[in-house]
Image 1 (tube, rainbow, N blue to C red):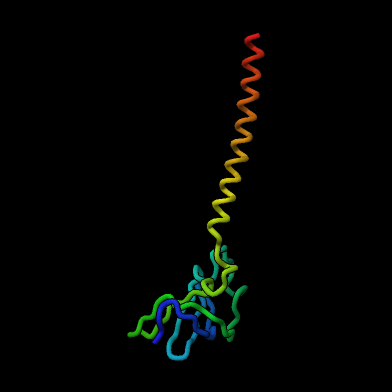
Image 2: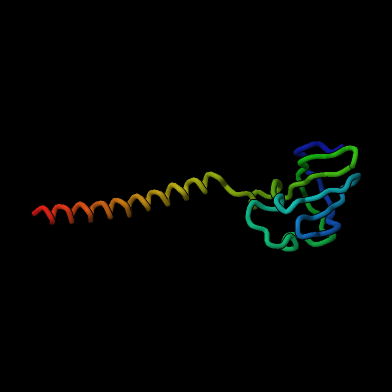
Length: 117
């Protein structure tokens, strides 16, 4: 009926602080707040309104309960964090720290030389 990683269209039926409930053709589902965006989500209502029809990714389907676990962010790459970029930022931060450390070491070395003279 609903396979993992398939994209489907759902209609938002209710919004709570922890997620958005929705309806697909033959099942109800939930988009948990953690599946809205990788970035901080203060209020889900900033993303959806009741009645919105949106594309989501199927994470899981419970055939007995006819319940879908859904992801909005998987259909919207701009809401995903780019790990490569974060690693690059960290490398840059360490390079800047090393530059500062080298400057400090150079000052300490100059002071030692001056003390020995």
